[in-house]
Amino acid sequence: DSGVTQTPKHLITATGQRVTLRCSPRSGDLSVYWYQQSLDQGLQFLIQYYNGEERAKGNILERFSAQQFPDLHSELNLSSLELGDSALYFCASSLNYRGNSPLHFGNGTRLTVT
Amino acid sequence: GIQVEQSPPDLILQEGANSTLRCNFSDSVNNLQWFHQNPWGQLINLFYIPSGTKQNGRLSATTVATERYSLLYISSSQTTDSGVYFCAVGPRLDQGGSEKLVFGKGTKLTVNP
Image (spheres, each protein chain N blue to C red):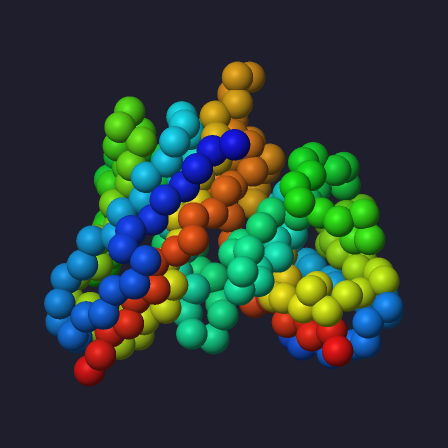
């Protein structure tokens, strides 16, 4: 068990809808990352938060947004969903943002857009 | 951006065999990690190894940062080792630390009984 908790495990929704994915980092970790894994794109970095502030942005679509709350949990909001958004979405956490500590992943949320 | 190449893309072994997985990267890094994604999709951190050598049971890893590669060794493989092994690197920042991790495409390992 990595200590990173993601909910829900599975999500099935229709095109055009909006969903929220939730993540609780490992105890003591201040940095949260979101990754998308699809068959054709591999593991793609979306966004990183550190202690409530956005730290780095990757290939995140404008239809997607995220935030980290004061209790350090994070939410990823996906709106106007398209079929191509179907993927496994991972949250990960690390001690800090400086890249000198291990990254630990949650079990992911499998999103299916129909 | 930094390029990460993993080889081989696919590897099939008999239980008990040894294997070496390779990760090449195109720029200086301050962060390198190896992950195992099991058949259920879970991503497990195996090593945080920006340089040097580490061992954990039947697994060991070596990173030669100056030559821009890392190796993951699996000895006496077991069926539970099956899955995809990812190398991820964090490019060095001028002010210290590293940027976000960039993942390779992975090596898919199948260990047959």
